[in-house]
Length: 100
Image 1: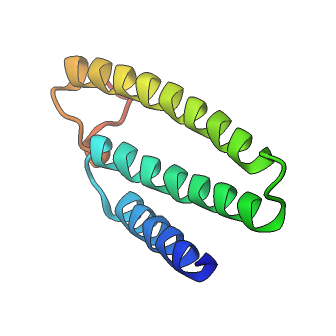
Image 2: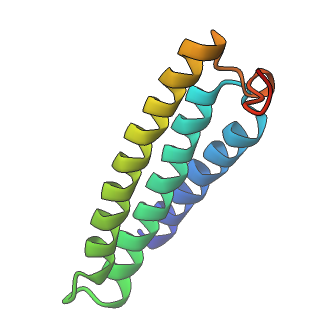
């Protein structure tokens, strides 16, 4: 069971990392970052259950990561909407914020 969950987590992490590296769209990059966070959460919960099932340290840490990821998504989408209002584009290679 442990191997299956770790393979799933590695697959999610790999897909998220590939999408983060190759994406040109900021929304897609945020979604891929969320995939990476979810893969890490799966690892936390799995290892917490496998090594010490009486304590919920991994699950509690995963809840903190979920809360941080939700805040990151909200702030990221707010920044993206501000960039879109100013630049009329959300492509990563077209958004140089230092030039007007």
